[in-house]
Amino acid sequence: MTTANPLSDQTAVVTGASRGIGKAIAIALGKAGIEVVINYANSPEKAQEVVEEILDSGGKAYSMQGNVGDEKSVETIFKKVLERSGRIDILINNAGITRDGLLMRMKTEDWQSLIDLNLTGVFLCTRAVARQMLKQKSGRIINITSVVGLMGNAGQSNYAAAKAGVIGLTKSTAKEFASRGITVNAVAPGFIDTDMTKGLKAEEILSAIPLGHFGKPEHIAGAVYYLATDQSASYITGQVLQVDGGMVMG
Ligand code: NAP
Image 1 (cartoon, rainbow, N blue to C red):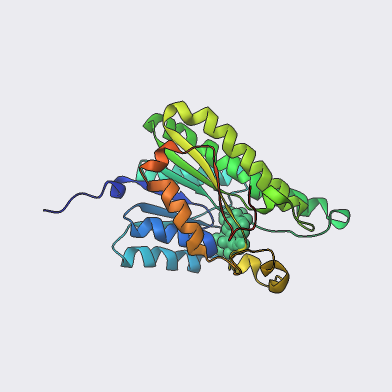
Image 2 (tube, rainbow, N blue to C red; image 1 turned 180 degrees about the vertical axis):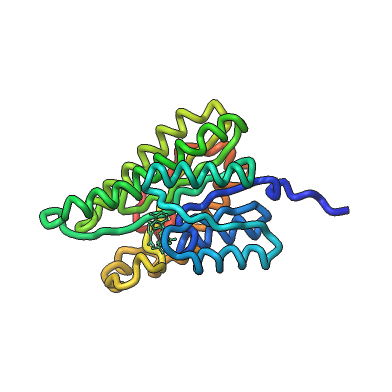
């Protein structure tokens, strides 16, 4: 007799899941039997590859284009997901960009476009799933922040401000939703080998990482998977889990 997999009744939405960290998270959740919605902005082929990888492993997945930094687009994404899947158990707010530059030279546009996606996008998606999760009396929301949101970084004032904002948003929503069985946590990656970090000066960064190497998207996916699915994680909320090779301690 086979035991039914309780995860196979669940649906997860992963924003920015066509590449990098979001892709690894989607694959980890999908291979565990959770139906995964692969959100992306501009890479339909890459999103489809992620869908195929999950389907080939016997899982369930579909892709959903949409700009997470745009209110109307977010409303459409979650309306379509609810029409198709009927429920949302897990939301991973992962989509993010960088628009680096020293503050003195930063264009308002580079500040605003980053805040719109990396911070307001998390607010919009959280608000969009909240009603459904409150109805279900359960849900797990995991926001991808960054060690830069904890320690700051010259040349990334916009990114650091958004990621610090995500931590405040995580703690506040964790308090608002706790009595309704919904947990909200953040994962703070250090430097992870993805398109986002291509071209950074590796030697300088490596000297700040006690474990001596960049992380892989799968390191972040493992931490997210734990917070999203583990029974013991149902008693963890409002926390920031750093997965950073020891970059920021204390
Ligand atoms: P990445 O490789 O550049 O991938 C970014 C993902 O976000 C892509 O799937 C992209 O979709 C999607 N995206 C971009 N704009 C979007 C929008 N407006 N709406 C929806 N999706 C959008 O980045 P990553 O390194 O995996 O980073 C993922 C998250 O981890 C980000 O929040 C980032 O800030 C955070 N993080 C990364 C690191 C690191 O070292 N890599 C460290 C700390 C935190 P398309 O392919 O369609 O463009």
